[in-house]
Amino acid sequence: MIELFYILLITGLLLTGAEIFVPGGILGVIGISSLIGAMIVSNFAFPSFGPYISIGLIFLLLVSIFHWAKYFPKTRFGRQMTLETDGADFDATESNLAELIDQEGKTLTPCRPAGFASIGGRKVDVVTEGAMLGKDQTIRVVQIEGNRIVVRKV
Image (cartoon, rainbow, N blue to C red; front, side):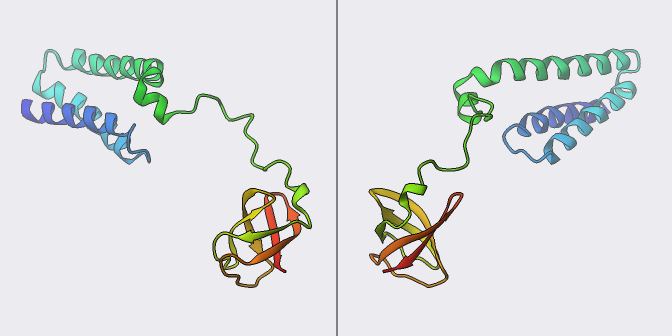
């Protein structure tokens, strides 16, 4: 019974920690379930200390989550995994696309019907009106809808 307690405890801690690197919730749910199982088994493995172990595990988990949330984003690895800003100022539309209307350029990749082109010295993502174009074809911008640049072969 004592071995089962240690197996559930270690499995729960490892899976809960792994949830941070493999998001999706499944590892976290299994990890938390293992910790709950360890709490239940502790009452049988250590009858006189079972409730104290359960309270200690809950406290340990809460303290771990608090410290993780406070200190992990400040670590080198944490800075690579998180955003520095909240994203409220992100702009999904590219600016100054309207100035590309009626300009000519060349396709950088085959357009089937989407691809990349160089227009006005800028590399942009374009879509044709439905035609398939090869690489290095001369094109003209005929329409812009948000970020969508529609081109036609000249």
